[in-house]
Length: 417
Ligand code: SF4
Image 1 (cartoon, helix red, strand yellow):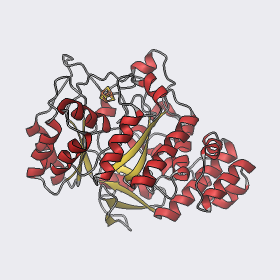
Image 2 (image 1 turned 90 degrees about the horizontal axis):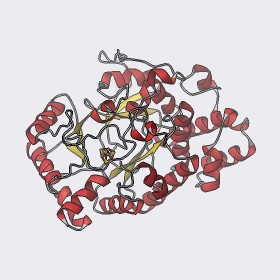
Image 3 (image 1 turned 135 degrees about the horizontal axis):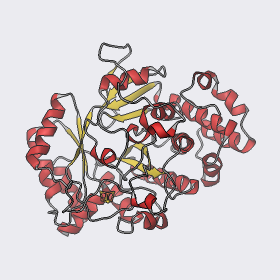
Image 4 (image 1 turned 60 degrees about the horizontal axis):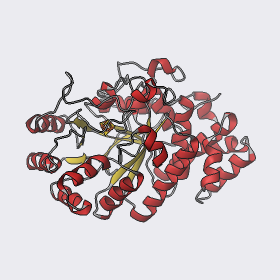
């Protein structure tokens, strides 16, 4: 089967691919190209494509991407700060969390996190992304105190922090109303929040993944309240575990409805489930992670279903690896995410990727598919376009997995982050 990130695939014009699609797939894609919203049934038609229909979906998604955001592939220079891996929630899909007495449990001090933030800025980062586990005895004001410490030293640094789960935990700990808690975080310097902890926004799926996690209604409340207060967020979906295509479609349509109301999502980030070190997989409760076929469908489907509302579709290179990231960037996605510098969560859980990709490596990778690299801010303001290669552009020396051989690069476990 022809796939993106393949010279032969690249030669096929989108309209020729569309002409070879089955009538129902062609009809849905034509409607999207004409600027109309697709509904659930059309989403389901696209979520289950194979063969020529998959080529048509990815080609049309790539064309929609070109029309909306052009040929640039953006990335942000950032650093992940995972302040603790101690967590009481017990999500069955998580390979990151540890009990407080575990020999590899950690809780970094504020001074250490501050030092990492300073180092990140010195290395060109414009953002730190802060998330962590939920320890039992966490002070509900910890999140705000950490923000204040970072902002006092680095007022210009964009702080992208705290999932809806963490914010809900802070609200529970402090007994403050949600809006007051978020406003306190904003006043302390919170610039945006990760739309993680979404997994699949369906309570029956969530019960099987993590009965202790926040419910769909709570996730939506945090996001809508944050957006109303002028705090933007990303949006995410974890796929490749117990869910079915129906859940992908419903999840994306729900995000689209929220975005119509709030306009607060900066991007959508599909997160492939990395299975092997998770309880969920080990007890036979989930399939063996995301497949290359699912990766393509999910990224292309997101481009089509969110068309007109969420302009940026991001690949998670930590979950996908380089080759599959590039394939998805030719199937509707337009953003490479962050350089990360440190990404403990997927790495600790067993992923083959997840330390650091330098900006030069990102640009070299982007150049291999004939697109133009551009560094962006967290909120997608373009900081610099790299029309021509420079001396810093070098291909990563680490593993460059070959597309279609999942043993070399399919990540092996995942959290919802
Ligand atoms: S996914 Fe997050 S909330 Fe769930 S167990 Fe892991 S660290 Fe805790």
